[in-house]
Length: 418
Image 1 (cartoon, rainbow, N blue to C red):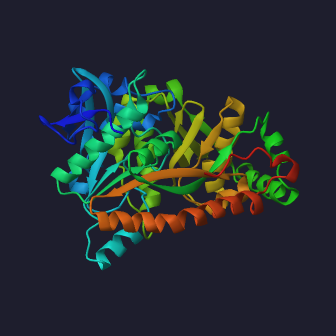
Image 2: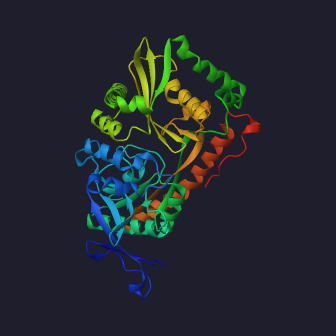
């Protein structure tokens, strides 16, 4: 039973259940079209210990103010700020999208099916971080507040914004599991998927990690990891003071590597540009790490990574020179070794890639939540998920049991499949 009410522009989105409306909490909702319309300190005060750096005000500001996530490029901000009186108690970053480019929602089949049925999937309202398929906190709630109630209030606000702006579907992409549960309780349909992440199982060294692999894969990794030395390539991580004191140089380097590689791909998208990297590296250098490969004193490849708590997130890579296994060493092996040395719990190397499986990465569950304002379309989504979810669960189990490269005696302790 709903025990709160949300006021949007002076009117209530929905009346609470029950007869005594004056006895329930009342929240006011403000919708802003730029993250810079809320103070950074206010926004960041809502971040809890498991929130990633990608939902920090500085990151969202960099991606918006650089123009990378702008209405002209298909991202129209509609961020929700939920207050009780004058106190900001919850918020979420949301964008109106006319397509699914860059949000990694994987909803093209749904959109096509809706079009064939003469129903509209777009425009949609997505709670997400542009170009960032990383699971993390999506519905920000002030510490000490009732998280489930405020998440439900944000969902009510999202529905009201969608109704007023004639938006057809609402999506929350890559939330954490506890958020997914609350989103389901608030009436959204949850979807299960997976990515391949490296998990630190208490390894004391890279050799310790390799020793847990079966002999075939251990030999393969050692062979690939030996290549940079033979090629005269040195790998290192730029972080901390080195990056902060020369942020403009490293932002330019990362942008050039990114563009040089993306532009060679048939389906490559240069979503992020030098303006984004410069804003980000200047505003929040502390969680940023750049893995660089140097040959004859020059940078020939690199990866842009971000640290959040005890997790490392691999985002983008690029190279000026092609060398065998350079990608695996820059994007995977070097950072795995760093995670072990620094005691990090996990390394999320990006959204895709079954090639990570034979290199010691494992399937990890991801979540999303969806609602269509048209009841017919909403029912169709739920029917589809009733068939898709068991298949996804079985696929995750298959990867964990049949595709594992770990020795049998070290394969215990896998996280459960939802």
